[in-house]
Amino acid sequence: MNLLGKLFIVLIFIGSIMLASFSVVLYATHRNWKQHADVVTAELNKKKDDLTKLQAIKAEMEAALKLEIKRQADRSVALARKVDELTQDYSDARDKNADLEALLAKEVETTRAASKDMEMLRIRLDGVSEALVKAQKEWVEMSTELVKEMDKSHSLAIQVTNYQTTGTQLAKDYRDAMEVLRIFGK
Image (cartoon, rainbow, N blue to C red; front, top):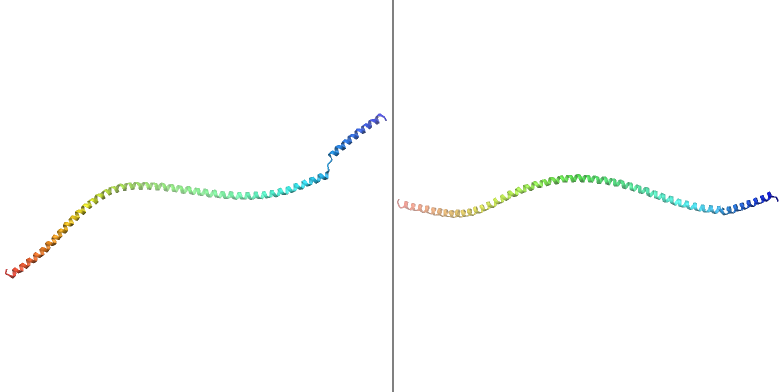
């Protein structure tokens, strides 16, 4: 054989080794596509089930979120109303408190004036009490004197009655004596 034939044999040998190594590498990287498709299909079905469950959970959560948003909005409206009511109540209470403070100030002033009047009346009452005690002493003295005078008056009345009785008796005796004297001659 000639040199060129030998060279082609070597090249064919190198090419066959290369093709054998490519086939070994290809076999090593070879996959069972049916098994891989079954695994991927099972994973896909599992992912679809998970997706369905997650979508159901998402729908439930969205419904719960909408319900909570509505509840919070209603609560916010109720709180806003409550704030308005409390603000109005506070305003009313502040106005009422201002009125009560004005009334209290007026009552305090009235009480002070009444206290001053009472102090003046107490002073006058003390004076009147002293005058009353003095008048009572005078009354007691006058009552005692009146009783004495009434006793004298009664005794004088009794004496007058006695004198009148005596005078009447004397006048009768005088008439009788005058009668007797007229009868006996005057």
